[in-house]
Image (cartoon, rainbow, N blue to C red; front, side, top):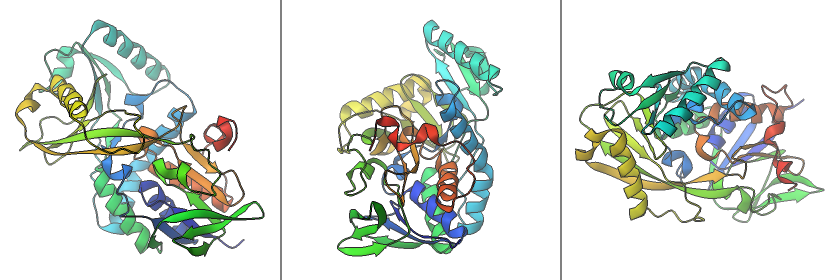
Length: 369
Protein backbone atom coordinates (compact mmCIF):
# COMPACT_ATOMS: atom_id res chain seq x y z
CA UNK A 1 0.00 0.00 0.00
CA UNK A 2 1.54 3.35 -1.00
CA UNK A 3 2.15 5.82 1.80
CA UNK A 4 -0.14 8.85 1.70
CA UNK A 5 0.48 12.52 1.11
CA UNK A 6 -0.25 14.20 4.43
CA UNK A 7 -0.97 17.80 5.39
CA UNK A 8 -0.38 18.68 9.04
CA UNK A 9 -2.05 21.87 10.30
CA UNK A 10 0.01 23.41 13.09
CA UNK A 11 3.79 23.38 13.51
CA UNK A 12 4.16 23.23 17.26
CA UNK A 13 5.80 20.26 18.91
CA UNK A 14 2.83 18.06 18.00
CA UNK A 15 2.76 18.96 14.34
CA UNK A 16 6.54 18.82 13.91
CA UNK A 17 6.87 15.47 15.65
CA UNK A 18 3.98 13.97 13.68
CA UNK A 19 5.48 15.29 10.46
CA UNK A 20 8.86 13.83 11.42
CA UNK A 21 7.48 10.36 12.11
CA UNK A 22 5.40 10.27 8.93
CA UNK A 23 8.29 11.49 6.78
CA UNK A 24 10.57 8.88 8.32
CA UNK A 25 7.99 6.26 7.32
CA UNK A 26 8.11 7.48 3.72
CA UNK A 27 5.08 9.78 3.51
CA UNK A 28 5.21 13.12 1.74
CA UNK A 29 4.38 15.66 4.42
CA UNK A 30 3.47 19.35 4.18
CA UNK A 31 3.45 21.18 7.52
CA UNK A 32 1.41 24.39 7.69
CA UNK A 33 1.93 27.19 10.20
CA UNK A 34 0.58 30.71 10.24
CA UNK A 35 3.68 32.12 11.98
CA UNK A 36 6.93 30.70 13.37
CA UNK A 37 6.99 26.95 14.19
CA UNK A 38 6.38 26.44 17.89
CA UNK A 39 5.63 30.09 18.61
CA UNK A 40 2.52 29.41 20.69
CA UNK A 41 2.01 26.92 23.55
CA UNK A 42 5.10 24.87 22.67
CA UNK A 43 7.42 27.78 23.47
CA UNK A 44 5.34 29.03 26.40
CA UNK A 45 5.58 25.83 28.44
CA UNK A 46 8.01 24.88 31.22
CA UNK A 47 9.18 21.56 29.80
CA UNK A 48 8.20 19.40 32.79
CA UNK A 49 7.86 15.67 32.08
CA UNK A 50 5.93 14.92 35.25
CA UNK A 51 3.15 12.34 34.89
CA UNK A 52 3.52 11.22 38.51
CA UNK A 53 3.70 14.72 39.94
CA UNK A 54 0.43 15.65 38.23
CA UNK A 55 -1.45 12.33 38.30
CA UNK A 56 -4.91 12.17 39.84
CA UNK A 57 -4.98 8.37 39.77
CA UNK A 58 -4.33 5.30 37.62
CA UNK A 59 -6.04 4.90 34.27
CA UNK A 60 -5.57 5.27 30.49
CA UNK A 61 -4.30 8.84 30.72
CA UNK A 62 -1.58 7.98 33.23
CA UNK A 63 -0.60 5.02 31.04
CA UNK A 64 -0.34 7.34 28.03
CA UNK A 65 1.81 9.81 29.99
CA UNK A 66 4.09 7.15 31.44
CA UNK A 67 4.59 5.56 28.04
CA UNK A 68 5.56 8.92 26.57
CA UNK A 69 7.93 9.72 29.44
CA UNK A 70 9.63 6.40 28.81
CA UNK A 71 10.25 7.36 25.17
CA UNK A 72 12.10 10.58 26.02
CA UNK A 73 15.69 9.37 26.54
CA UNK A 74 15.88 7.84 23.05
CA UNK A 75 13.75 10.64 21.60
CA UNK A 76 16.17 13.28 22.93
CA UNK A 77 19.19 11.39 21.58
CA UNK A 78 17.50 10.97 18.18
CA UNK A 79 16.70 14.66 17.92
CA UNK A 80 20.25 15.65 18.80
CA UNK A 81 21.56 13.34 16.08
CA UNK A 82 19.12 14.69 13.49
CA UNK A 83 19.27 18.38 14.38
CA UNK A 84 22.54 18.90 16.25
CA UNK A 85 20.60 20.41 19.18
CA UNK A 86 20.76 19.03 22.72
CA UNK A 87 17.27 19.55 24.19
CA UNK A 88 18.66 19.28 27.74
CA UNK A 89 16.75 16.19 28.79
CA UNK A 90 17.43 16.00 32.53
CA UNK A 91 16.50 13.17 34.93
CA UNK A 92 15.94 15.75 37.64
CA UNK A 93 13.13 14.20 39.66
CA UNK A 94 10.29 16.17 41.25
CA UNK A 95 9.29 17.15 44.77
CA UNK A 96 5.69 18.05 45.60
CA UNK A 97 5.72 20.14 48.76
CA UNK A 98 3.09 20.26 51.52
CA UNK A 99 2.83 23.35 53.71
CA UNK A 100 -0.13 22.10 55.81
CA UNK A 101 -1.17 18.91 57.55
CA UNK A 102 -4.10 18.45 55.16
CA UNK A 103 -1.81 18.77 52.16
CA UNK A 104 0.62 16.29 53.72
CA UNK A 105 -2.19 13.75 54.13
CA UNK A 106 -3.12 14.16 50.46
CA UNK A 107 0.50 13.55 49.48
CA UNK A 108 0.60 10.44 51.65
CA UNK A 109 -2.42 9.04 49.81
CA UNK A 110 -0.92 9.90 46.42
CA UNK A 111 2.37 8.18 47.24
CA UNK A 112 0.50 5.12 48.51
CA UNK A 113 -1.54 4.53 45.35
CA UNK A 114 1.45 5.17 43.10
CA UNK A 115 3.54 2.65 45.01
CA UNK A 116 0.68 0.15 44.76
CA UNK A 117 0.66 0.82 41.02
CA UNK A 118 4.37 -0.12 40.86
CA UNK A 119 5.78 3.40 40.49
CA UNK A 120 8.71 4.86 42.39
CA UNK A 121 7.48 7.41 44.95
CA UNK A 122 8.41 8.30 48.52
CA UNK A 123 6.87 10.43 51.25
CA UNK A 124 9.52 12.60 52.91
CA UNK A 125 9.47 14.75 55.99
CA UNK A 126 10.30 18.42 55.55
CA UNK A 127 13.77 17.76 56.95
CA UNK A 128 14.36 14.87 54.56
CA UNK A 129 13.22 17.01 51.62
CA UNK A 130 15.62 19.80 52.64
CA UNK A 131 18.46 17.30 52.72
CA UNK A 132 17.71 16.66 49.05
CA UNK A 133 17.21 20.35 48.25
CA UNK A 134 18.76 22.63 50.91
CA UNK A 135 17.19 25.77 49.41
CA UNK A 136 13.69 24.43 50.01
CA UNK A 137 11.60 26.56 52.36
CA UNK A 138 11.88 25.80 56.11
CA UNK A 139 8.07 25.98 56.19
CA UNK A 140 7.78 22.76 54.15
CA UNK A 141 6.18 20.06 56.36
CA UNK A 142 6.42 17.12 53.95
CA UNK A 143 7.12 16.23 50.35
CA UNK A 144 6.33 13.53 47.82
CA UNK A 145 9.43 12.56 45.86
CA UNK A 146 9.01 11.28 42.30
CA UNK A 147 12.54 10.46 41.09
CA UNK A 148 11.45 9.35 37.62
CA UNK A 149 9.76 12.63 36.67
CA UNK A 150 12.11 14.63 34.44
CA UNK A 151 12.33 17.73 32.23
CA UNK A 152 13.48 19.12 28.90
CA UNK A 153 14.06 22.65 27.67
CA UNK A 154 10.92 23.02 25.59
CA UNK A 155 12.23 25.90 23.47
CA UNK A 156 15.21 23.81 22.46
CA UNK A 157 12.79 20.95 21.77
CA UNK A 158 10.81 23.17 19.37
CA UNK A 159 13.95 24.11 17.44
CA UNK A 160 15.27 20.56 17.35
CA UNK A 161 11.97 19.14 16.10
CA UNK A 162 11.51 21.70 13.34
CA UNK A 163 15.07 21.16 12.08
CA UNK A 164 14.80 17.37 12.34
CA UNK A 165 11.49 17.39 10.46
CA UNK A 166 12.87 19.60 7.69
CA UNK A 167 16.00 17.46 7.32
CA UNK A 168 13.78 14.37 7.13
CA UNK A 169 11.90 15.79 4.15
CA UNK A 170 8.96 17.65 5.69
CA UNK A 171 7.98 20.67 3.59
CA UNK A 172 7.06 23.75 5.65
CA UNK A 173 4.64 26.38 4.37
CA UNK A 174 3.51 29.58 6.06
CA UNK A 175 -0.05 30.77 5.68
CA UNK A 176 -3.58 30.88 7.07
CA UNK A 177 -5.71 27.75 6.73
CA UNK A 178 -9.12 29.02 5.62
CA UNK A 179 -10.79 25.62 5.75
CA UNK A 180 -10.48 21.88 5.45
CA UNK A 181 -11.54 20.81 1.96
CA UNK A 182 -14.21 18.10 1.95
CA UNK A 183 -15.40 15.94 -0.92
CA UNK A 184 -17.88 13.07 -0.56
CA UNK A 185 -17.68 13.35 3.23
CA UNK A 186 -13.89 12.97 3.17
CA UNK A 187 -11.12 15.45 3.93
CA UNK A 188 -9.11 15.91 0.75
CA UNK A 189 -6.85 18.81 1.73
CA UNK A 190 -7.01 22.41 2.92
CA UNK A 191 -7.49 25.90 1.58
CA UNK A 192 -4.29 27.79 2.38
CA UNK A 193 -4.80 31.50 1.70
CA UNK A 194 -6.96 30.63 -1.31
CA UNK A 195 -4.62 27.94 -2.62
CA UNK A 196 -6.18 24.45 -2.64
CA UNK A 197 -3.69 21.92 -1.29
CA UNK A 198 -4.75 18.32 -1.77
CA UNK A 199 -3.66 15.33 0.33
CA UNK A 200 -4.71 11.82 1.25
CA UNK A 201 -4.81 12.72 4.95
CA UNK A 202 -5.11 15.91 6.98
CA UNK A 203 -3.88 16.10 10.58
CA UNK A 204 -5.30 18.87 12.74
CA UNK A 205 -2.67 19.73 15.37
CA UNK A 206 -3.47 23.40 15.88
CA UNK A 207 -3.62 23.42 19.67
CA UNK A 208 -6.06 25.93 21.13
CA UNK A 209 -7.09 26.97 17.61
CA UNK A 210 -8.16 23.46 16.52
CA UNK A 211 -11.87 24.19 17.01
CA UNK A 212 -11.65 27.30 14.83
CA UNK A 213 -10.63 25.63 11.55
CA UNK A 214 -13.67 25.78 9.23
CA UNK A 215 -14.72 22.52 7.63
CA UNK A 216 -13.05 20.30 10.26
CA UNK A 217 -16.42 19.62 11.96
CA UNK A 218 -14.87 20.03 15.38
CA UNK A 219 -17.33 21.47 17.90
CA UNK A 220 -16.35 25.02 18.88
CA UNK A 221 -16.36 24.08 22.56
CA UNK A 222 -14.42 20.83 22.20
CA UNK A 223 -11.02 22.50 22.59
CA UNK A 224 -10.79 25.77 24.51
CA UNK A 225 -7.82 28.05 25.25
CA UNK A 226 -6.66 28.35 28.86
CA UNK A 227 -4.15 31.09 29.56
CA UNK A 228 -1.07 30.24 31.56
CA UNK A 229 1.27 33.00 32.66
CA UNK A 230 4.94 32.25 33.34
CA UNK A 231 8.01 33.96 34.80
CA UNK A 232 11.71 33.30 34.24
CA UNK A 233 14.18 34.12 37.01
CA UNK A 234 17.96 34.08 36.69
CA UNK A 235 20.49 32.80 39.21
CA UNK A 236 24.25 32.80 38.65
CA UNK A 237 24.39 29.12 39.61
CA UNK A 238 21.58 26.55 39.88
CA UNK A 239 19.94 26.76 43.31
CA UNK A 240 18.27 23.35 43.18
CA UNK A 241 18.03 20.37 40.85
CA UNK A 242 14.57 18.87 41.27
CA UNK A 243 11.32 20.31 39.94
CA UNK A 244 9.51 21.82 42.93
CA UNK A 245 5.72 21.87 43.05
CA UNK A 246 3.03 22.95 45.50
CA UNK A 247 -0.72 23.55 45.40
CA UNK A 248 -0.03 27.17 44.37
CA UNK A 249 2.74 26.90 41.75
CA UNK A 250 5.86 25.16 40.52
CA UNK A 251 9.52 25.79 39.72
CA UNK A 252 11.52 24.14 36.93
CA UNK A 253 15.28 24.74 37.23
CA UNK A 254 17.45 24.86 34.10
CA UNK A 255 21.08 23.75 34.05
CA UNK A 256 22.34 27.30 33.39
CA UNK A 257 20.71 28.87 36.47
CA UNK A 258 17.42 29.95 34.89
CA UNK A 259 14.30 29.04 36.84
CA UNK A 260 10.89 28.79 35.15
CA UNK A 261 8.07 29.66 37.56
CA UNK A 262 4.43 29.01 36.87
CA UNK A 263 1.61 29.15 36.40
CA UNK A 264 -1.96 30.42 36.14
CA UNK A 265 -5.07 28.69 34.76
CA UNK A 266 -7.36 31.34 33.28
CA UNK A 267 -10.40 30.92 31.04
CA UNK A 268 -10.13 34.26 29.26
CA UNK A 269 -10.54 33.22 25.65
CA UNK A 270 -7.72 34.09 23.29
CA UNK A 271 -6.32 36.94 25.43
CA UNK A 272 -2.58 36.44 25.97
CA UNK A 273 -1.80 39.45 28.15
CA UNK A 274 0.38 39.10 31.22
CA UNK A 275 -1.35 40.58 34.26
CA UNK A 276 -0.24 42.02 37.58
CA UNK A 277 -2.40 39.56 39.51
CA UNK A 278 -1.02 36.62 37.53
CA UNK A 279 2.59 37.59 38.09
CA UNK A 280 1.94 38.29 41.76
CA UNK A 281 0.42 34.83 42.24
CA UNK A 282 3.35 33.11 40.51
CA UNK A 283 6.05 35.05 42.37
CA UNK A 284 4.39 34.53 45.76
CA UNK A 285 4.22 30.77 45.13
CA UNK A 286 7.84 30.72 43.95
CA UNK A 287 9.08 32.55 47.03
CA UNK A 288 7.08 30.23 49.30
CA UNK A 289 8.81 27.21 47.77
CA UNK A 290 12.31 28.69 47.76
CA UNK A 291 12.84 31.91 49.76
CA UNK A 292 16.26 32.45 48.15
CA UNK A 293 14.48 33.39 44.91
CA UNK A 294 13.29 36.68 46.41
CA UNK A 295 16.48 38.53 45.44
CA UNK A 296 16.82 37.10 41.92
CA UNK A 297 16.19 39.27 38.87
CA UNK A 298 13.11 38.63 36.73
CA UNK A 299 14.49 37.99 33.28
CA UNK A 300 11.33 37.38 31.26
CA UNK A 301 7.58 36.85 31.59
CA UNK A 302 5.01 35.65 29.11
CA UNK A 303 1.65 33.96 28.63
CA UNK A 304 0.58 31.04 26.47
CA UNK A 305 -2.72 29.37 25.58
CA UNK A 306 -3.08 25.69 26.48
CA UNK A 307 -5.61 23.56 24.55
CA UNK A 308 -8.16 22.40 27.13
CA UNK A 309 -10.91 19.78 26.97
CA UNK A 310 -13.70 19.32 29.54
CA UNK A 311 -12.34 15.99 30.78
CA UNK A 312 -8.72 17.23 30.56
CA UNK A 313 -7.80 14.38 28.21
CA UNK A 314 -6.25 14.89 24.78
CA UNK A 315 -7.98 14.13 21.49
CA UNK A 316 -5.88 11.67 19.50
CA UNK A 317 -6.82 9.60 16.47
CA UNK A 318 -9.40 9.60 13.69
CA UNK A 319 -11.52 12.72 13.25
CA UNK A 320 -15.21 13.23 12.44
CA UNK A 321 -14.75 12.35 8.75
CA UNK A 322 -12.58 10.05 6.68
CA UNK A 323 -9.13 11.39 5.95
CA UNK A 324 -9.07 13.74 8.97
CA UNK A 325 -7.02 13.00 12.08
CA UNK A 326 -6.84 14.94 15.34
CA UNK A 327 -3.93 15.56 17.71
CA UNK A 328 -4.99 18.30 20.08
CA UNK A 329 -6.34 19.07 23.56
CA UNK A 330 -3.13 18.13 25.39
CA UNK A 331 -3.66 20.92 27.96
CA UNK A 332 -0.76 20.94 30.48
CA UNK A 333 0.97 17.87 29.04
CA UNK A 334 1.79 18.80 25.45
CA UNK A 335 5.56 18.60 25.86
CA UNK A 336 5.33 15.34 27.80
CA UNK A 337 2.98 13.70 25.27
CA UNK A 338 4.86 14.76 22.14
CA UNK A 339 6.66 11.48 21.29
CA UNK A 340 3.75 9.13 22.02
CA UNK A 341 1.24 11.28 20.14
CA UNK A 342 3.48 11.38 17.07
CA UNK A 343 3.90 7.62 17.19
CA UNK A 344 0.17 6.96 17.57
CA UNK A 345 -0.94 9.34 14.80
CA UNK A 346 1.65 7.86 12.46
CA UNK A 347 0.38 4.37 13.26
CA UNK A 348 -3.27 5.34 12.74
CA UNK A 349 -2.63 7.00 9.37
CA UNK A 350 -0.48 4.13 8.12
CA UNK A 351 -2.93 1.49 9.34
CA UNK A 352 -0.39 -0.05 11.70
CA UNK A 353 -1.09 -1.82 15.02
CA UNK A 354 -1.44 0.79 17.77
CA UNK A 355 0.93 1.07 20.71
CA UNK A 356 -2.03 1.99 22.96
CA UNK A 357 -5.83 1.84 22.90
CA UNK A 358 -7.05 5.23 21.65
CA UNK A 359 -10.71 4.79 22.58
CA UNK A 360 -10.42 6.96 25.75
CA UNK A 361 -9.11 9.80 23.56
CA UNK A 362 -11.67 9.70 20.74
CA UNK A 363 -13.15 12.99 19.57
CA UNK A 364 -16.73 11.75 19.84
CA UNK A 365 -16.56 10.99 23.57
CA UNK A 366 -18.12 14.45 24.09
CA UNK A 367 -21.33 13.41 22.36
CA UNK A 368 -20.50 13.83 18.67
CA UNK A 369 -18.69 16.25 16.43
